[in-house]
Image 1: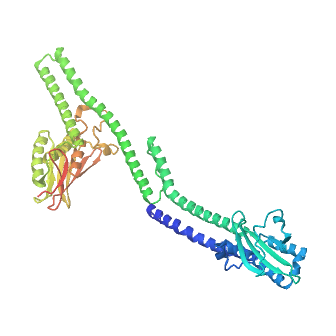
Image 2: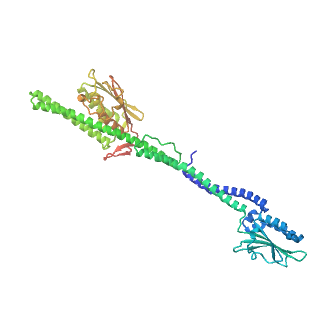
Image 3: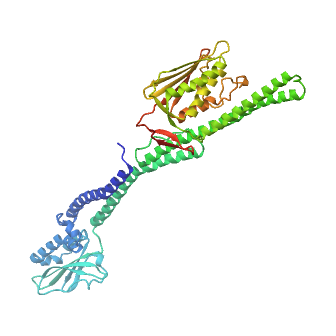
Length: 515
């Protein structure tokens, strides 16, 4: 399960706040037990009081020599003359050296023994005077200033009245090695815990943020270079991933726009070439006939009339082409002010087909019209533009009819649930399977040579498709070469609770209910 970046940051904050404290606590407890045991083994300090002593250096340093001090006091009570024994004093001094301390022995005010470390040093200011009232002193004196020394002294006398002062000097400037190691290890452990925890969490966040950003950066470089064929790699489902997925959608849109632009540029070039051809063909004919009249080739009134009639026909063809280009341009830029209205489908097609039938009969073409929709079936349409659709399709059927047999055009209207289905079929030449998908493209004609003998600009069906789509309808064609072509149109039926797309005077679409 992928976690959101916001939740990751919250979790990271909680972990960075709690986990180091927990780990540091565990490490401190473990290290305390280990070092407390070492202190007990080395200095014979009770591990139960080590932590308390750690925060009171005076007590800690005093306890280091406590056992030796007790031994010296016991010997001083039982056998004070033993402090004249050099080997015994060296033994005591060796034991004290392990406790970071030194031994000084005075007899009748004269130094009889000093640790090697103290020889040559003025230690008179450190040592307290002999106290006659109390031979054994348990009080440790602290000497500050430059000395920073803790002094324990035992004053006693032997059977002959000799006065002894045995002093234990512990320099506070020294740090017990175990305490130093404990502090260093503690600092190192806390530092490592913080570093490792931070590193792991930062790597976790890094992979969640920086890795997708690097992929996004690579994607931007590809787009900058004009490469829209790459795909964004898989990214986590978080906020950064959402940005990457939005970027991928943008890439797809940009790719589609780029391809559309290339296709549009090609279509524009094709459009210019086709317009040039379709205008040049009648102009060439007009020029030829005009020159024929000027050169006297049309030397009879009959020929002149024929030439002028042909010129007039060519001018009409050019006028129709320009008119269709104007209409398609307006449709393509949504500048045609549709006038949508509630239309009874049966009455509308009855009137429309009555007009068409008269024109077709004049050309010797039969019209078979049938309406299977009742009087209560309505559509919402622009009557003028819908009539243009019917006329363009019928006109195409007439232009591409099969001269070898009598032309027949069928128009049928069906009520199919939510739709009105309109069928316009002929028994003409038909359209090849390879050409059929392209017949609604502008300026596409099945005669690749663009022979103008049959007339037509090649944008009639493009206009038909645009008008039907603006009516929220659907149009498609079926054809068998040599048998004929059938055009199918689906238009939404009018319903009382429906909303329809209506054009205002500016040509902009708005949704309004029709009653």
